[in-house]
Image 1: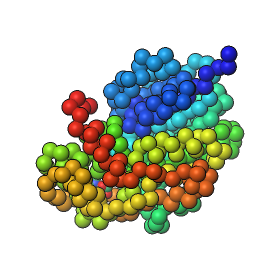
Image 2: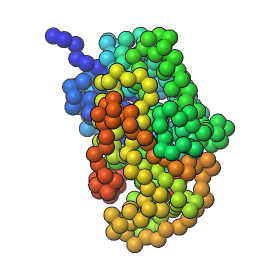
Image 3: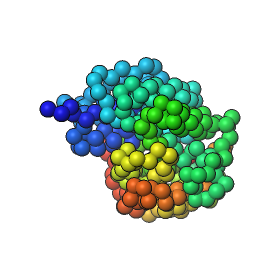
Image 4: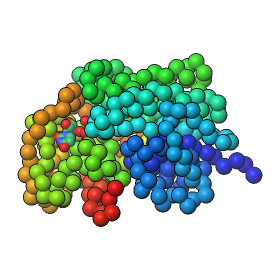
Length: 315
Ligand code: UDP
């Protein structure tokens, strides 16, 4: 009997990691889910614990990783990923991007496995080029509060390319733009959970700055499809995956009010340091090499997301 295909997903109990666990289990893989639960949540993978193809390993990937048997693919998604989380955990964020990526690449080399790095639109910093193409090198403040995440991910990209070029590891890099959907944490501080939570509770929506900064929001299912396509492709350079529909944060606040039917007001608060003024992916590469483009409009994706946040037993 041929060996069952095996995937290691770091950060597998997080928002995106857990959706990837679901996808790979559905696709017939054996899945090792690694998480140290700094920002991941057991609830996200509870339904998988009884599946004999699913194995949870509670582990901090900045320490050596031991996986029995063969491994076909490694998806490195472990990291605090919201501005509030990486400001609360600056050193673990730097360590998981640097040491964690080194360890997962070492595992990929030892197991001769395909490796996919979850990178981020934050590598573009506060971008001076718009929309952002993969060829843009970015505008990052290395010593600002966001530097812990941005530079960790930039290092992660650099070491991934070095393992690809020097050790011939079969690597992929996805640059993930703002993504939303069920399993986001209510308290992760990002604009989507904040606004939905505020609207549902009749509290004012906290718009930072004037709300004229822009973001482009991708529904998680589109992102997961993009990840799988990139993993199955032969493209080794970074690929943007995100939804190019761009909104100002004030427009987004108004949309959340409309979709939730809330009568909350908007209040303006201080803009965080180095908050990017504009963000929109150029997805020409993903369209060309992966035949991928997002399918879910923001309005449609907000409905199941709001439903998730209205569930009683919320983490
Ligand atoms: N933001 C906001 N109010 C909030 C949370 C966030 O206006 O309660 C803004 C934030 O300043 C940024 C945008 O929304 O311009 C997206 O922030 P988020 O934390 O979701 O992620 P980012 O895209 O900055 O990584």
